[in-house]
Length: 376
Image 1 (spheres, one colour):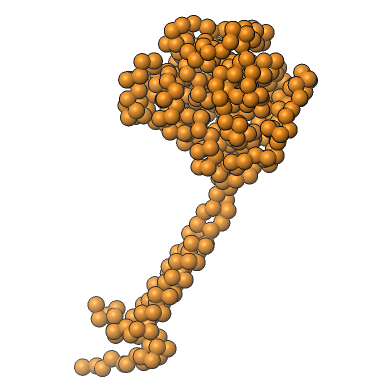
Image 2: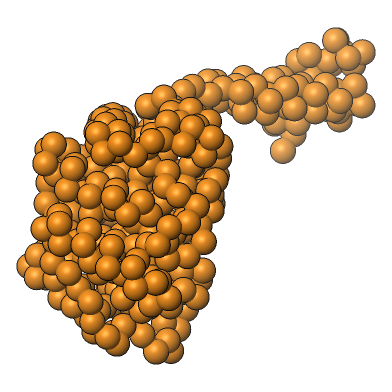
């Protein structure tokens, strides 16, 4: 070892190497550059298309003479409904609804499809309710823009602040988007939603309004009991439309036909859930096997879009939307990467410095002149 270490380090030399080491570490941490995130172009296109879709729905709402509540809908999107109405299935969180009035959620869905290993041409099944109309729009557009094929079923009811306006329900919105060419395809089946997926707990007037909304927009009404029959019918419709080849399933909102039980919605991880989740959560123990459980059991990953605040924090989307956000902002589009060549250069320079110090070549700077080795 004397070949490499030719003298004992003094205190000044050790302090010097320590300080320089800290500086090198700090400089390495700062050696970053901003680069486009994976699927940047797809995410940007999906977000732009979603923004246009929002504009279509806003125009449609105003055409129906339904005013926009600027206090509860500060983005003036037209996608925030009423606190209560005859078709309101449960209490909803206004801030959560406002949070999804952001076209960049389409980019988040694209990212989740990538994480779920969905490929172009794959079928992606979706179950949606009227509770998060903006997220419904973003999801369908994201799947199409990604290059996958969406097949979906839905329920017409909505929690508060969602698509719970009797004259502007989710079936009304979906039809308007399809007629304007914003989306392709259509809901294969539409149920009433709410308890047992048949509007249990709603007044009869509310159930009548939901049936009318489904029929006036030309959808197939699904209204059967018990709940498992509704789940099985939706499952069969999705599998049939996809010729049995469903690569992933997306749940939007807290639809009981999708979850089987509201408790399951709380247990699932927001974002991607892999098939092992079926066993980990003991989903076979629940009396009703929802769509989530069915697809997990058969090996398809499930993307759970319900706890939107958690997802927004994880992917860097704003938690408060006071105005329509700009397209293409945030970590979903740009990410910081280390500049490896700079870090390698810093490391190499530090190793050279260490070599010089421990071999005494810089000893004169530390009051430790290098002595010439005596020859024997």
